[in-house]
Length: 76
Image (cartoon, rainbow, N blue to C red):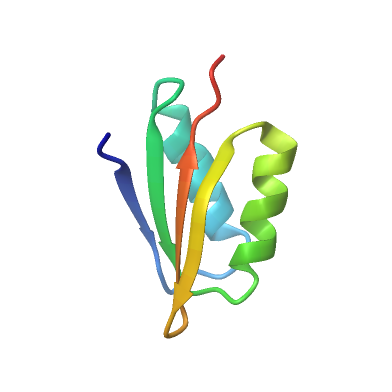
């Protein structure tokens, strides 16, 4: 499955989450969204966002100050 890409690098909290929420609204249930971010609070923010909304956080990793998240939109 190919994930839709959202580049949120350079944005500070809460913009990466707000843009993610908007991007997920345009996806069908079960589709994936890959998010790139550089905000140091992103890991905590994305974990909390997924817990609160029911979307899946399939993967997250950090390489050289850049974070990559793969989310799966919840099935409605």
